[in-house]
View 1 (cartoon, rainbow, N blue to C red):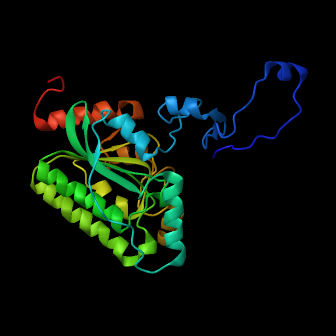
View 2 (view 1 turned 45 degrees about the vertical axis):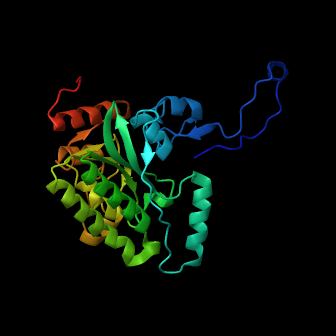
View 3 (view 1 turned 30 degrees about the vertical axis):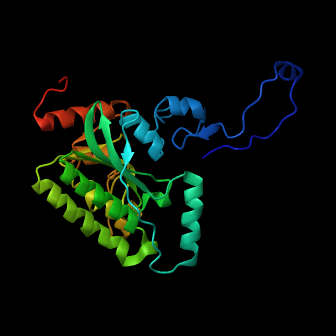
Length: 284
């Protein structure tokens, strides 16, 4: 939550002399420790709360800046636009508003870049665009990225963050699960590496398709991962569930993911996995 306004009080004589001011829109409230923290301090700390270590969600551009070598990222050239198959009046307006607010055309960016000199195909999802929901464009971009990885014989990395399928696009959004899964089958048959990185939160159809199909599945600490939410599951099965059963830590203990990686170590971990898969040493 951004604290854009702080109640103005009459400054003391000392404060008037020092001319100290608090810039508007420069502060964040941490959802975990509830402390107000300086936005620049959070950014410098890889979008992690400097007070309690809570992971803030990341914009696509910030994630690319952290993972991909500077100046090496090139977006895949995809001339497609978000559809409105159910002809919902508010849907088109919402998409336009989100594009202006986030600077993104859709909830995923797909492209080719380098990690410590190793070329990869990479997709990064963004929760700020309709909670990273998967509609036609998201499914098409991810599928195209997979096909590009096959064509160019490159490793594939997907950073997932999602609330699930985009129901504003009805059954067509659900079809993206089969579409992306089918493409990943071809990637596997080609013997290429796919690393899936789960971030907070990864839910719904994304979890039920490409997010769970990595050769290696990594997750950031504290990420919530699942298909449906805890309350929905409990109402369906009529039983209470273990505390924290959808956290990355719980899933690691039960074999659903391979490793929890701190944000500061992600780039180096991805690089090592790519080098190991190639059969080379990481310092080559």
